[in-house]
Length: 68
Image (tube, rainbow, N blue to C red; front, side, top):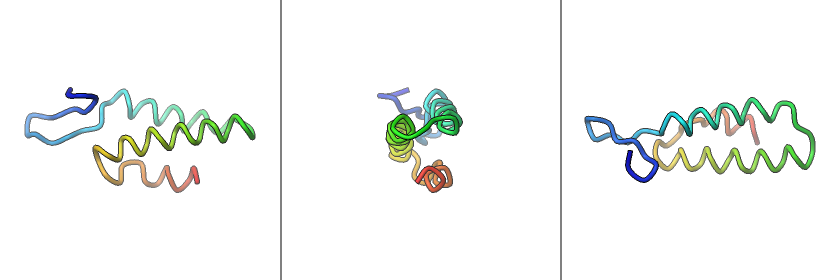
């Protein structure tokens, strides 16, 4: 891992599993939230997804559409 990005044996960049898990967990959590708490969590979750998107474009693109 280099500065939060995984580099595989072939030199390809990968999103760390921990970040993937946090995004999926966060997405599942927003289903039970309301109003202000929901908006705050959505913003945070979108930030994590966009961060992962810097490593691998279009990752979680369906999730982004559902959040918005």
